[in-house]
Length: 151
Image (cartoon, rainbow, N blue to C red; front, top):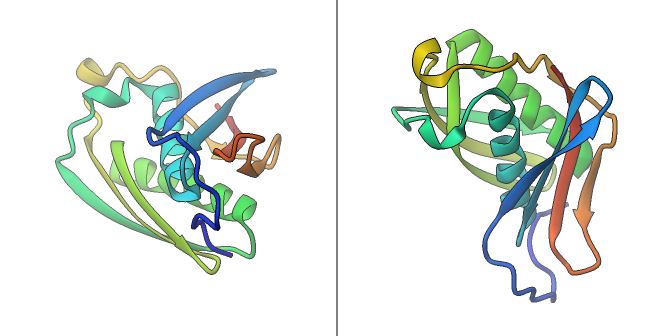
């Protein structure tokens, strides 16, 4: 299991993310030209539930590693690892560098300590769930990584 391109060339070079409605929780969806980029964009989408990720300064680097038998479980583990790091370090993150290979994820997240005045956190994300969980390519060959988070 690797997030590498295999003989498919799509024109999308910019990653993007979006939210989707899901009852009282929040759906996250990240898009990218690679699985790694889609995971990065899903993390940005999660941060955007809390604050504007563009105002989070990359002052401190945090290393994160996860292992799982498939992409879907790896996405859940990745997001929950970020939630854990945010809670224990009292930080928010705004930039990510993700690399997956053979069921392992190695990532760096950059951010800063939470400043309630600056960041104006909207909600606390409690955990990534299996609801609407999907990682794969869409009909255009773009990687999509999505799930619902409990807020």
